[in-house]
Image (tube, rainbow, N blue to C red; front, side):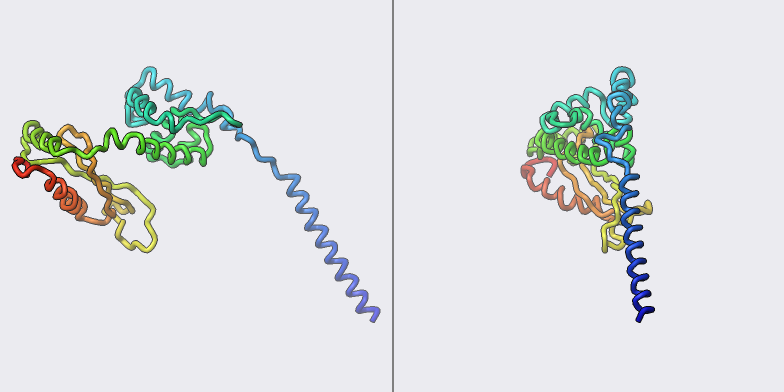
Length: 255
């Protein structure tokens, strides 16, 4: 009996020591844990080091060619787009100083035009990754909502006839309503899709098909097809073009 009691006492003592060590380690970890920043130091100097307040302003003042290369538009067009989306991108100053509407637009356009990783875009503008991601989503939504009714209107019958006449006069290509082309947009392979989205370039994509008129201005006819499909243009022409032709007057020379 005395031996059993002694072993039990030693076991309880070992358990107590183990619990004390666990508690002490947790306390040490809490003491070593660095407090989270309200704003990371690299982002504090956003107005002094961020792309929008430094290089972009210099490009606006004297290097429009480089500005166009980075944002796929001129400074004048940038300001025009900003004018449309300004109400949607303006934020009130409540606790932290909000990003300027132009800065939000620049982040989105830089990401869309360059195709860079969102982490690199966020670092260049000295903003957080989640902030950059939110700017891109909100800006794209605002651009679509504000501009679709101005630039994505469906042509009338008279406008379709005018496009056909201009194709014949300018390009000597009669009875044409538009030129069709597509671009592969890289994506992550959807689950259970097999080789449907696998393209000839060795990557996964969807093909964005679009139609332009005689002046290379896009008409609101577009479609998306899996990158592995070889009948994208034919499918688009069959589905969209026949619908368009059915709207033309019977006496039209384009029918």
